[in-house]
Image 1: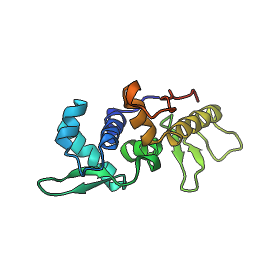
Image 2 (image 1 turned 90 degrees about the vertical axis):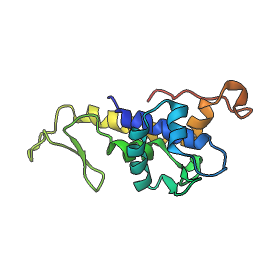
Image 3 (image 1 turned 120 degrees about the horizontal axis):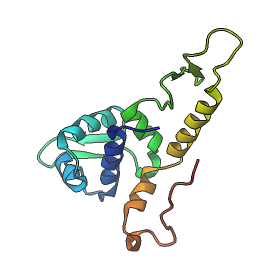
Image 4 (image 1 turned 30 degrees about the horizontal axis):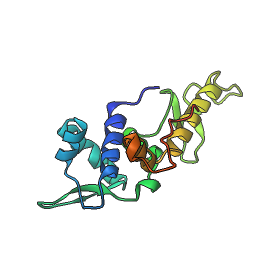
Length: 160
């Protein structure tokens, strides 16, 4: 499964915002420069993140963007879904409002889609990994080894 540059760049944007001390909003141009990302693309992404309630904006000469919640409370599932939409390993997968996974290959017969179990497990594993990863963890992981919190070595993601 591949995520688009929306997810990659958006997560990098969020990590950069999470790295900032509580000194106020950060301009998108400084994020673009720090991460070497296109400013116009970041403007598009930050709008989605703002609509999802993950970042706030401040207007004015010293305006910019900041996290709407502490980094410890923001999961990567929230970020990725705000940018990419619902996580689905196959185009035929759709989740109902009740949380049930539906497959467009299934008919109303008694027979289930032959691969639905596999793709449901893949989707569940990806969702668990994203839900179990906070922005604070990524911010800490991105620091040089000497700057990480004592006793808290950065952990690489465990396989799902």
